[in-house]
Length: 62
Image (cartoon, rainbow, N blue to C red; front, side, top):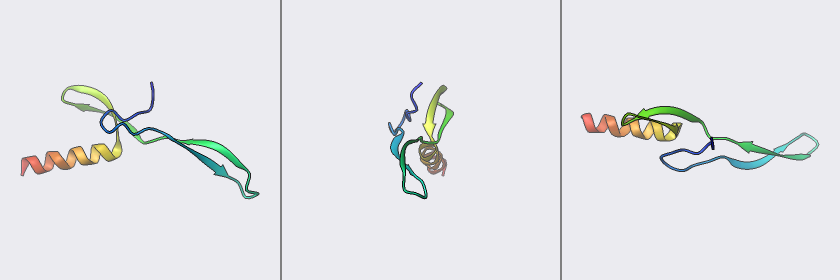
């Protein structure tokens, strides 16, 4: 399964891990995906989307 957010489409980015001697090795920076039930379906959603979904729910109830 690809590590892609189902709501915003964000995915991992590539970068470099740089040592003290400045040797750069490639690394992958994954996003923080969590499985969440939204409208009865289980989806993988990043934590920033979960935060905005919860905020919208809270505004809707007020």
